[in-house]
Image (cartoon, rainbow, N blue to C red; front, top):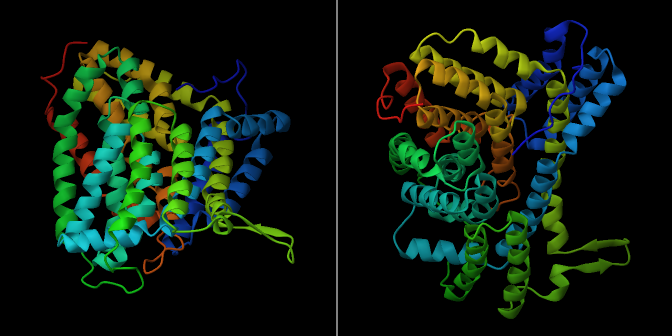
Length: 459
């Protein structure tokens, strides 16, 4: 995936580099304050982003160019894909919820004797399989969270660890799947073979996953089961599992995420109607007295509004930062400072980490520093697989841990309006993503000690 290259004359700001970074610093400070204050959902971030963009406009020397940069950032193709995917996935989630699938899953899981930490661990493994098969972390959250999170209420699962296990499983596949965009980007930018990269990456991913699985089993139980979800035998409702299975099949065949979600909505509607789970009027009806339309389809669309506006505003802010040319200047500066194998690895890790925070997009961060990582890595004897692994593991940590990134905000939005389960903040989501924390620790250990370095192919 590529991103627009800055023009030959970068956008300048009053105060130079500091002035260019001040709007993003305001955003980070505002989001951190809101999160630590128990901020609600992603809509609470909207005013902070608006203020950050307004501050960037004030500091930009060319106001028109800054406005164009913001709009360019908002209108890039990946943003539109994400918005449409979230809109469709929210509709699918509502249809599956109203079909009684959650109640059927609760009954089946309870009948199997799985609850508490066991259910949280199973949820992690389910998401691991889904994300690895599809290569999409956001798709995993969108499809799995509406099914697994509500079920936790009647199965004595700790809410924070449960949503943490869902995003943790999504992280795993994003990191190791051969069809993940980050896997492809990290391998291609370093000139490595995709299969070799995936095999070599497992030595980092599996220990982190083992730690996560153990923590989820030990600490994932809440000790109490809430009332409210259907727990009577309902084997018929399990037929609705055919819907996510269809979506998974479509994605495994490397069809478009949007295509898979549309198939899911159509099949969920038809199957739900056939099973008598809802009627045509439940899907869409007209309230003539109030001049409004209502129904499950609209309810699902409304659920996607919060995260969609957050994403549009955030990518606008990032657009202004990219137009300033700061990322290009950073890569040029690093090239002159990597003098040994270990230092080269630390610089690769540090620069891709910085690019991830500044761009808030994993693949964009890899593409941004990929050429620099290859240059300094080859000069310092860091193998192609090793370079690709450092890049990919780094970008599969922060976006799934920090509350300023789309995955954590999206996962938090999936906890809204769930009977018997609390709404959680992006802070809660990231804090309980044990796999990403363990993955970050494994990467730091590998660079510091050289573990895994000798097993890499020569550059």
